[in-house]
Image (cartoon, rainbow, N blue to C red; front, side):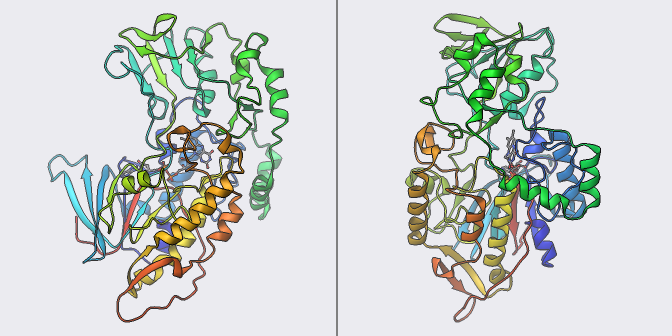
Length: 493
Ligand SMILES: Cc1cc2nc3c(=O)[nH]c(=O)nc-3n(C[C@H](O)[C@H](O)[C@H](O)COP(=O)(O)OP(=O)(O)OC[C@H]3O[C@@H](n4cnc5c(N)ncnc54)[C@H](O)[C@@H]3O)c2cc1C
């Protein structure tokens, strides 16, 4: 979004980022083995393809350096306030703008809280940003050892010679368990709740020939990107793969039956030597429910097991909006979501009652198998259409109507009922079993089609003077995940 605004020649915007560097997910996730599970030529900006990706699926350092390269290339460092957390944004109907309150963490000698005014607010806080912990007694209060979430990996903790518990079995745990258990002195016990489908590995190193083609044949990266987009994973082969690779003593425990849940119902997990590592003597699985944490470790129905370190790989909070944003009806986004039975938006981008406000990777925009950047690029193109009349001061504000939002979501939820995600509990659903709030009911090409132009009749607009009529706008699109962005009318800091 920042890059595209600059391309439009618009520079009155500020990126507000609570951390001290760009990168988001790929800055924070430093656990061993952290890698993309989407091919990198798809998980890149369409306008910034990178022929130099070393692997089909890159590890975190390579992804982060791609993101930082873009930040330098487009001089985004000049537009950012680092170490600054947005705590609230409140719409002022008189001023047609938000008052944004920012807590600056690294400026001890100056005022800690900054208030700014923004005509447009773009929320880019990420879907998988707030670590989720299990609600089990004693987690914070009792355990005396070291514990952390995989999303905030504590690299200062040396796991050699330690007894380590891993709680959870999603993609993150599947990536780091084979690596930490690769040290035979580290004794790992993984606490799992249920078996899950694990797909055959997909990561491959590009050969010298492939890299040459990517670097020297201009259309090759785009051709590869299209191939990855259209590629279909053969779900039927998953069971056969798991049966072949899993150590025999674990077959009954690890391989789900189709009556447990269907492949793809939860976020897909690709094998990264996880299944074969189960044969290691220093790695064990525990399927007993954790009843509580005590001073020493973990208590199940079979008693207490002591650990030096407990690592939570228990996912993210996806069903609550994390910032206090208040709109023109006195309601916050969190309250609106709650009233709707879970996160809800129009085209996953605008929310009724919250004028001039956008949310990236918002409700029902994910696919579970494709690149989030595809979604965000589509959203940027849509948002640019909407904000153009605001930036040119023809409009003061626009607000998507509740009727358009309700009709859109009724359609989305009806379609979702036909998808596999409605057949099992997962974090795709509010409270794990409620409405599906993360997934889009179809391919990204359908989302792109629905988002190709703004239906202005779905918005209540406030013109600056007299009447206003929409005009078409063709804009190229581009976006890289950022923190929080406010645009326009500036009063501070
Ligand atoms: C382990 C892991 C692997 C993943 N793999 C893939 C993959 O292979 N393919 C894929 O498409 N997606 C993947 N994802 C999803 C991934 O989150 C997105 O692809 C993408 O990185 C999201 O970018 P973003 O900028 O929207 O959000 P994020 O990367 O989450 O960035 C959000 C930013 O907002 C900042 N922020 C949050 N709250 C505030 C606040 N109040 N004030 C100021 N700043 C704030 C954060 O510090 C952060 O920098 C993965 C996620 C995880 C966790």
